[in-house]
Length: 206
Image (cartoon, rainbow, N blue to C red; front, top):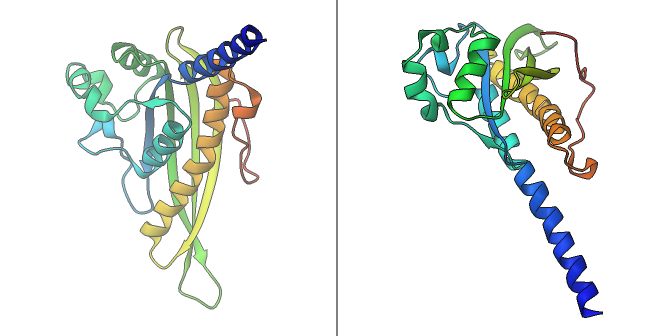
């Protein structure tokens, strides 16, 4: 009886360890961002850090058990190749960068915020954000899936409202990315995150 219990305990912890190690893949986030009334920017093309979109995605993805590569870790690699410092970095060069940093996946895309009309009987402005991205497996340069998400906010200041909308869109997209990564890593359906809201799921392109 003791041997049987021991066997099941070993099997149980072995499965948990396998799932934990499977979800420890390294991810690079390459999401250019443009807030309302601002220029489009990206950390790999300038001195800025992760955008509000990427910071939100990073937090959610790390919570799910994955590792997100910090911009500082890629500083030397980027400085050695001009192609890595282009705002509209190509899929080919993003994969090359990821290979040099030993990352497993790339989330490549763009996030754009825009302002709408004034809320009736107030001085609040409606703000919206759209986020499109594709998840790329580095080892064979294969696009796993195309994803999109949207977010909105209402604020007196359109720049602040735009940032809030971008964060909301990133939160929605993060759930879809995690689900795709879990499926790719072969994790159980129970560990997948259910998307919130009614945003469109997957698309055929960016």
